[in-house]
Image 1 (tube, rainbow, N blue to C red):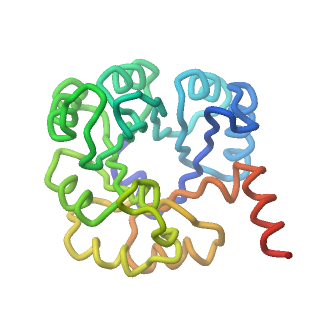
Image 2: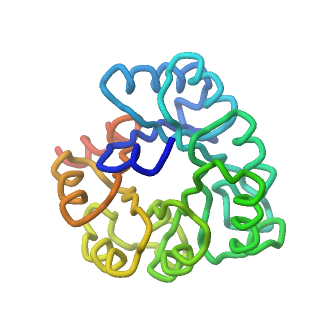
Amino acid sequence: MNLNDLKNKLVISCQAVDDEPLNDAYVIAKMAYACVAGGAEILRMSQVDHITKAKELVDVPIIGLIKKHYDNSEVFITPTMQEIDALAEIKVDVIALDATLRPRPDGKTIDELIVAAKNKYPNLLFMADCSSEEDVKHANELPFDLIGTTLRGHTKETNGKSNIADDFAFIKTILNFVTKPLIVEGGIWEPAQVKRAFAVGASTVVVGSAITRPKLIVEHWMKEIK
C-alpha cells in the first residue's frame, strides 16, 4: 500500500472495545465484511484479535491500532512499541498511534517512539492521531506518513471542541501548514460532510460511528426526533 491508495478515499472505522455492545472478534469481523460488501475499500480497525478475524473475511488495506489503557498515562491509542510490534506482526498496512504531546506510559516521547518505529518497520506507513494545532505542527515535523484529526475533542485540552465535521475552520487552518496527507476523522454523520472535507483539501476521510456503531446511531436518531 502507498499514500496514493488513500487519496480521496472514504475509510470505514470498524471498532468496538471495552464494554461496547459489539466488542467481539466474530461480530466485528462480520461488520467489516458487511462494510466491504457495501463498497468500503479501506478499513480502520483496532485490537489484534478483531483485525486477525476480519482478515479471514476481507482483503482490503487496514489502518490498524490497539486501544490499551495504562494506569500512568492518558495515551491509549497504540501507546508503546509493544503495540506497534503486535500490529506489525499481523501485517496491517498503516499503524495509527496517539501523536499528542502527552506523557506516554513507557516514558518515551512521541518523537522517540515514531523514530524507533520507522527505523524498525521502514516499509510500514504510520498515521499520527492528533487533537490540536500544536499536535499537528509537531507531528508534521516527525517521520509520520499521514496526519489525522482523530483525537480532537478527546483530550483534556480539546474537550468540548466541536466535532471535526462542524469545525472546518480547524481543518482549513492546519491545511495551511501540513505538508503530509491529512485524514479528517471525527463526528462525520452525513455524506455532505465528507464531500465538504474533500472540498477543503482533506486527502482522506474516516467515518465510524455513523456506520458501524448501532448504539450511537440509535442514540443519535433518538436525540434528533425528540
